[in-house]
Image (tube, one colour):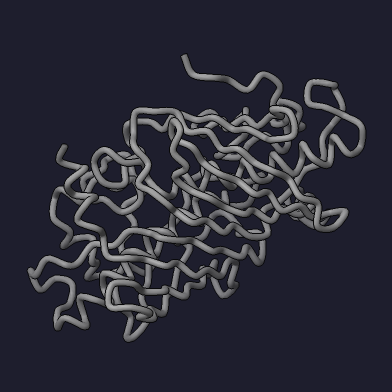
Length: 163
Length: 163
């Protein structure tokens, strides 16, 4: 049985911010990535689908990049929410982040047919910016390492969104 | 009318390597990214679908990362193929690359409803390794800048693939 994230930060995003192809619970065609705490680490678990092929038998790098991207913004949201005194599932609206940069080293080909687990360590580098140091595991093997820089979503985003 | 790539390197990949979710012509559920030359630049063009949302009105970063990933390996293949004296459409099997690393700066929110154009400059850093310096345009706006390091696919990949 695949391990699951019980309290995910994405479950608490307001509806307007829940259409993301990666982690939006209201995007019915998306991946529905969900990110939660495991002690002081953040965790996102996803089992790639048959279509997510790189070469036969291995997982597509773009899918791994997508997992890392939403894991990064979700982890930053978890970290700032915790700093503010809240946890997912508390009913308090969490802060929303955007990805400023995504830096990934693909260490090994990632086998298909197993769930992937992104494990993150959030590092505050500015009150509105976090680096999320992430490793993606397939079983016991680290297949990719990454640093995501996530910044608090600028107000201009929501203004543009509503134009 | 959306500009198109006429001679794409992916059209010449052998069938076994054409199942990629990003750029495999035989993956019927994938993006079908196609990468070709425009002079000394490499180009990949893609129009995101409605579902590829980040927040309403803007394109999902994981889709942009996927575009950059396949653009990178395709561009490296084009570059080494050219160095070997060939061009796409010549009937000669091109070399295949894997992504070693993916480094993306997201500069601006990427508007939906327009085609995206990744433009790459391949730089040979080793006989089997290229850095692909890439900019992703939405219209006249550079929305993301990236460097993809692509390495010639190791023989071990195809051995594992056939196990």
